[in-house]
Image 1 (cartoon, chains in turn cyan, yellow):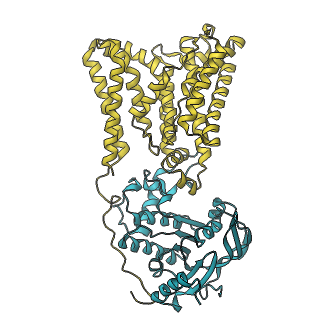
Image 2 (cartoon, rainbow over the protein chains, first blue to last red):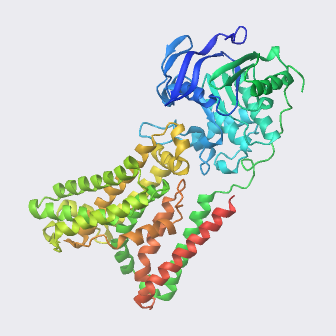
Image 3 (tube, rainbow over the protein chains, first blue to last red):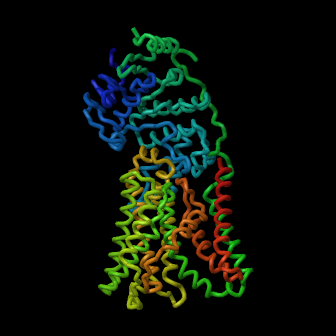
Length: 259
Length: 338
């Protein structure tokens, strides 16, 4: 398979020949995977295909057994979640990365509080920034937002919006969305896809992991299909309709190959 | 949906809770609730025995006794916010009191005694943190173990003997700890007030408090957001050890005597203050103001009950009534916010 990125998009992230095993289980078998600048990549594949392991290598949760990772043209090792964030990789993990009983402003800034040198939080500033983010990325009109409301009041789509807004706020260049539409209603899914378009509009890149083609298709520039630890397909959206892509996925599931 | 721009129409944002006009704050309503309970209890005392409760003496007496459970309850609140519990703090008070009194008996140096006392308190906190964070024993179980362990240590060390510290009187540190401001206000009451304010800022305005709340709410999410969960938990347990040592110093100096059973009365009253105050046992939510008022209620019940003319036999019953009613109200409030 050609390991190209979308035309004219310089490479932001590149994995070359990456292997990863857990004990005797070979989860990733020689992965070549790229993400271009300002490119939205849909990473699709069945459960157990290795999607989440691949993501964990990129976010520094695990380290590859062999192979190389390049980021902005430089070879790097991502040895921790903290490190991946420092270089501008943010992960949006479903709803589970939010504190349900905590306010919106606390959720927005958790782990990276705006604080003075004694560690005291500038609550007013955090609230103001949160309000701005909600207004700009979530379509709330100003004045109508209660940044002190706890997250448990929000719908699933709004929670994703908070998580994506948080990633954008911290100037991530690459935002990884782990099954962002799982368990959401159709209208909620639309909201999340709108948030993903914000990522594109801001000139950032994203990887959207999903096992549902329908959800990824409208916003992705390119699709990478992962199957049993290998890249089974790398398809530009311009080369394929949604129907054709779905058929390919079914064929893959049935025959184990796209050919 | 067409082929290239399969873009669904942007969904209109429905009015959600975040935009709903009435600002419902769960913590605020909890704190209002506990405040009302506090006023009712105090009103009952006032009506039951106006002579005692309009005079200064009862407040002077309460100000000298309540701060011990008050400071402990404030400190334990941070552990409860994490969704953990510490049952060993009264035993840490015991063992650190023994250290404090013994070092003083040998050295007649209050500063040295205090340093040794704090050192042992911090070490005891580390033992709890090691068991809970390092080994992974649930804190309820781990601190039942250390509760007996530290109490047993005190028993073995003291061998049933008390230690007198009467020569500490008049010393500068004695005045700072338990002296009487203008001859009227016990210094320990000022300690409790000051620490109450400090804990409020710590939990509500400091980065560490935010981390406590997040870890208690959802430890996995806290970890993903880059919070060092083990470090936060360790600090929480260690500070309980530290403040237990402070209470050991204050309570020992107040009576200038070490009793081998020092601290034994603080377990249930201290925890009751936290839960009557409204902090959730499930973690992720806590109120310092609630704990403060909870300590005032719990700490004044016994004296109040006796002075309104009931026998001491009523004490536990009324404790129980107040605790069950208040936690039932909180549970109902909690349910209504979903």
